[in-house]
Image 1 (cartoon, rainbow, N blue to C red):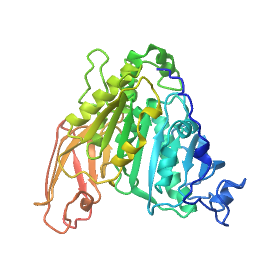
Image 2: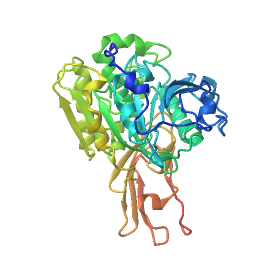
Image 3: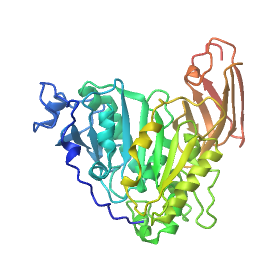
Image 4: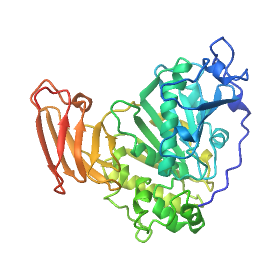
Amino acid sequence: GRFLPAPKKQATHKSAGFQDGILHGRDGEVLGSEKDPEAALGGSFGNPFGLQLQANLVGRNLVNFTIDSAQIAGSGWSESFLVGFPSNPVQPTPVLVLFHGYGETPQDVLDNSDFFEMGMKRGWIVVAPLGAHTYNYGIEYSQLNVEAALALLAGTIAPSVGMTVDADRFYAVGFSMGGGGAASFVARHADTSDGLHFAGTAIHTGSTSLSYTYWSTPSIQSTFDSPVMFGGPPSDPALTFDYTRCSATDISWATGLADSTTDMVRNLTHMPALSYYADQDPNTTLITQTATTHHQFRKRGGKGRLLHSPSTKHDWQTLKERRVFRMFRQAFQAPTALTRTLADRDGDWHGFNVTQAAARIFSPFRWVIQPQVNRFVVDEVANIQSLRLASPTWVGLNPDANLELVFNSADGVPLEIVIGEIDDQ
């Protein structure tokens, strides 16, 4: 629903620098002490993507970047994202991505939680994207904006200050609207074998099912019906897929049950996932969504915890940051055991490149690697024309040994399997 921002804590410590050192620019100046952020960060944000980029210093080691809307294909919205740079970075540098709540901005995340300070002190880069606008609910164009921000951070911004982003250690935390947004984004980006990989996520009282949010919260319906959002209700057959693809689960408002055919949360089962709520939170429908999504995650074989605390507040501060950081210890590990993957578009999913038979339809497939006998099994495949495994070694197969491949199409669509790194296919 429409949530008022939580009362802000005193945040003077957020921009006051750290006792263990501060970040310096190209000429030795303290980042945050001069007016020219490009000079402070290395002189130029020229990059191979040709993105138009603006940067404004908002505090010591804190810079707000903006990408022009014309530079984000398929979005139509500009993107603003706040980045905190560590004074003593771990190399390569982990990245913590924070998804804001309804009506909030990246600045609100900075003011209302300690994630920026605690992450930067650990030597991590911390980034809070806007996601196009403050009421985005993780809609498709919002996710495109976050993609653009993280790509620019990893490819241009971090190297400009001498940091190499650790592609295997991206972590996501989201609150309320952002809890659902984080779960959805990670479920659609725990996938590439040659890009960034999310290694963990924390969902704080999240709107993980947008159709459930629509029907349970009448005050949000005018927002969702807006032409700049979905343009109508999830009951409209032309819009059902748009709602579901941006949800970690699709939960029925009538029955309270998760739809096991469209649960994108299955894509998270190889990583630690924390689900959290305050048990007296007045937004009870969000508690229901968080708990139902967690149970569906566990039903799929995921390893994670559902925690709660005795609080009446709906805000960032009820989530204990140290508990989250304790969970975010391991790097990304490609799944190799029995794994079910759900794709909603062409692209990379868990190291496999999927070409769909038809667009705007979900494409499931189940796969298992048996490295002891070098066997790859893929079945329960639907709406997929081509499934390409570019790097068998990435999922534990040996390209120098005989490979046994077992596969079938569940829906009769002719299926092509392409495997790289093996001379005799």
